[in-house]
Structure formats: C-alpha cells, structure tokens
Image (cartoon, rainbow, N blue to C red):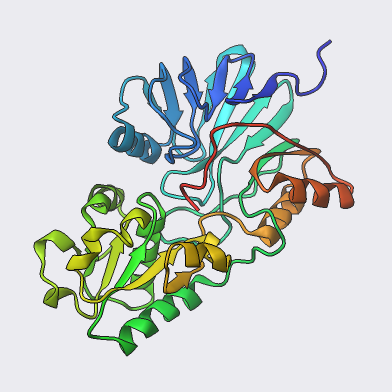
Length: 334
C-alpha cells in the first residue's frame, strides 16, 4: 500500500503528478503541463499539451508563441486526467486567467496555488478559498514586514502628485502582464478618465485584456504624441524603461514604480524612483497566514519566496509544513 500523497512529488523543475504523468508549472518542456498563469516563471513554450484557462492560453500564445496542444479549461470545470486523477481550476486572483489547481486522487485533495493575492482586482476574478489536504502556497512576501496598503491610498498618492505638477507627467513603471493593467483599471475606478499613455511594449497585452472584457478606458501610444500632449498625464512603461533614453521624450517625468517591493526603501532608491507605489499582485504576510488558516490543510508546502519565515510560523502554530526546493521562480510579477 502506497503512503498518503505519494502520487504527487515536488521536483526541482516542477510538481509531478505521477499517476497522470503531468507537471504543474514545469520549468522545462514536458509532454503534459498544467499551467496556473502566464508569467514567465510559471509558463513556457515547448510542451506537448498545455492545460490552462482560455485567458492564460491566450497570454502564452502572445508572449511565447505557443499554440500547439493548447487545452482550455474554465474556472470551476473539472477534467479527468490519466491514472484516476482529476483537476479543477479555481480563481487565484493574481492576474487575468490565473488559477489554483485542485487535484484529486484516491480520496486525497491537493491545491496548487501558483501565485495569488487576496485583494480585490478589477481585472480578474477574486481568489477562492478551497479546502484541501495539502495546500501548496507561494511566499513571495512571506515576511511580517510586508503589509500591503489599500490600493486606493496608492492611487490617491499618484493622482495628488499629478495635480500638484500639471506641467509634468507621472511615469509609472509596471510589469507588462497584470500590474500595468491593474494600475490602469484602479486609476479608472478612482475617477481618472483622462487618456493614459503607453510605452509600446505594453500595447499588445493591454489589447488582450480588452479582448477579454477588461475596461481600461482610452489608451494612447507615447510614440504617436508630443510632449505637450502628455503634460498632466499618466504614462505607463515597463520598469526597464523608467530611466531609459526613451523617457526623454516625456515632459519632465515624475518616476513612479508599482511593486510590492517598493515597501523596501532601498529598492526604490536603487531604481531612482521618486514616487514608490506599494502595489502587489501577491498576498502579503497577513494574507498568507490568513489563507492557510482558512484553507485548514493537513499540511502546507511552501514553493518559493521567503519560505523560512512562513515555515516557522506554521511550526509555531502547530501546523505541519515543508519548504520545497523548486527552481526558476523569479519576481517578474511582483
């Protein structure tokens, strides 16, 4: 008789579901991959078959030119895999299309979260608490110092700075998938109806979000406009363009960066950020611990990030836990 949960094995390059011979978010090409979301540290091309939400498959096609073997699965849908395993995709609240994967086999339930957040986000469905026996969680911001402020406060900081300097623009560095679209949508929710200007690298992903029904309002390309047009405007760009030669075409930009890492002042100084905006698409410390309590698993597996602190918290609260040694996970989507 096999020990409990021996059918799911963490390997350095991904999580292997042995009876189905498939992998969750593998870092190398495999025959069958179950993908939680489209960020490059979780999704890649080269798989024989890729199972993901329609949104994630569209993102992967755009970013990694993947199409062959794409198998869409909607939220709440359950599919049968080989070996008596079933998989159900549940919203993770991280970015468009992001999902937790509930795996069931031999009466045992495992949830692989991928990346997730607990805050409301107008660009994607909210995280759903899913009871299970083993809960596999990230720990990107798994330190008590990380407490994300309400996003309305960060939007107010941005808009107040813009109002005080109408002759300038605010240039916001934000990752191309998820963060940029969320900032735009939150600006709209805060009442900012003016056109928002985009670096060309953000255009295709913003258009994809629009194709899936996410309202981002009027967006304009920086390359189609003059400095005068952009005075008093919000301009969005990838973080790499914040202090690039490209920004010279803007009217005396106030540099801002939208990231959970802006809580760390040294990171803001390193990037020469004048207006740090603490906006994260990951759960903070309180939300990580809250989620474990709500899910109430028999055991928690911690995949990447600040594993040691979250592991210690589990031990101090009499919860079984282990840290997994997975490779290839970065902070692209912070």
